[in-house]
Length: 132
Image (tube, rainbow, N blue to C red; front, top):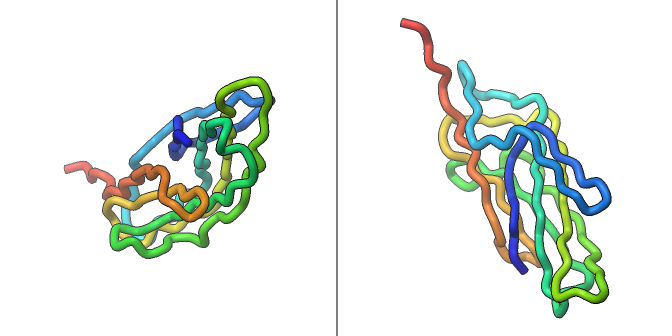
């Protein structure tokens, strides 16, 4: 399997096998922590080879700079099927409301497929620059 896309963004959707991603980002700024991001999406496009067809367990974790959970993990499954090709792409879109970041620094969104880490995306939480 190949993770072709894994990103935090402002909006994402899967429509008939087409993944739309708008406003990909890796940094948010805040005056202070804890800081709550009002709405964010996580988008993934995973390509499975023909011999990998079937059900796959998927977990997406939000981790702080020490590797501790920021939010409860998303757990679900993908039923991957296809005929006549050597691979099949599966899209995953998760919408998150009110993700709370308790510290500044490099946070991580991690994708696990069948219990194995397959991709990660950073989210840097930085202090806003204050005017002099």
